[in-house]
Length: 220
Image 1: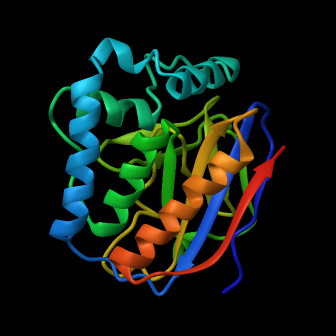
Image 2 (image 1 turned 30 degrees about the horizontal axis):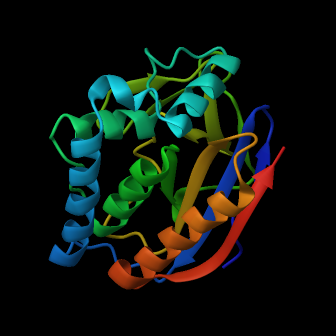
């Protein structure tokens, strides 16, 4: 398969991208649950809810949102929302092996991750600000209005963001090829982003039978 390419049209961000195929989406195994629970317990012991926003990575993501004119307290970055949930003792959502791996990586790094079924992504793809009147059906929420907010958009329109992704490109049992994107603030270490991508690829291979097609770190 040909890896999805993304054009970055807004400043202040570095994108990490990993594309995998031959994915087998399934319920999460006890071994993966064990990794998730261990990471969640460490954060729960070490952090308070108030302390989440003070973490270096979370603070940098919040600054990135403000630079885009987006209030991170109103439209909370996905990584911060997950960490707040973990620190409150609620743990990570348990959805599927693929989604759980992505959420685990997001709390480990503090960066928002998005994960998409490439069968429903129609190139060209850009990371840009939402235009007037643009919306999509968000996972776990009603219609998501994206005007003036950062979005990933393809030929059919917006489908993802550092806050919430769409039902159109969501991971299902029928998914076989996956694009995962890391939304890291500009200035983040390329080596750290690549390490995070490698960790995603290793877990997807180990827990979902995936084969890595490509990884990339994209600067504007």
